[in-house]
Length: 298
Image 1 (cartoon, helix red, strand yellow):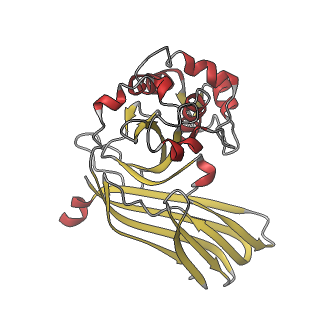
Image 2: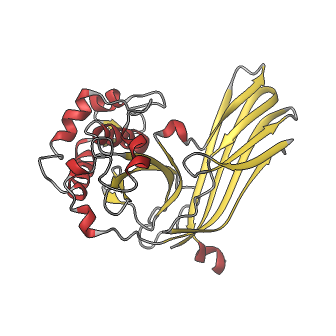
């Protein structure tokens, strides 16, 4: 599928901001299953300094510094992307999960050394005991890693309720386990804690999910949102099985990958530091993921 992805982030302040330093992860990655035809980021006010770089995980990162005094800051990212379904090595998915632990089995595959970092605890995906016990029901002795990961995904969808009011950006895996509710970011962190606490390497993936429109209804522009899912390392093929616990499915050609890291803290869409006397600020985010054909026919 070909998509036009628009992601606009707007900060509004009640007093002038004299200086704003920012980092943005909002340019999709070029990947074997994803081709990026174009990607751009525009910022208003225009920064005195802006540059792009590649971070340690291979993500495209935009750095900017705005020195013009402003009451509003807008970061507008626009991309055109083609995504195809990923084909996995069926034999590799049959590997017993116990053999898919790169720290305990460093010689199991050539890429084990690179995957090992993603088997470690990270700040937003702590290995709480409740998550370890929850995962144990899926990680039974000798079970194929593909089957075990998929079963964990099914159970998270069944046992946890999607609720935007249940958690905040500071909520922990322990909070999600206790409330049995959260949003995509929470479910991704939960899945990470579940797998990593048993030694399986898994990474946090940020991006977008193209929503399906009910038959006969016009697609609502702006209805899409930033999304998060997880990818578990599969030795033998050195592939990563990408799965979406929020929607109970493997990542498909509807999932546009922007960046990945240990957890959300590595790849937020925008973060930064401002210098201001402002007491209040507001944040508005508008995301739209549309099949490119819609724009071709307009």
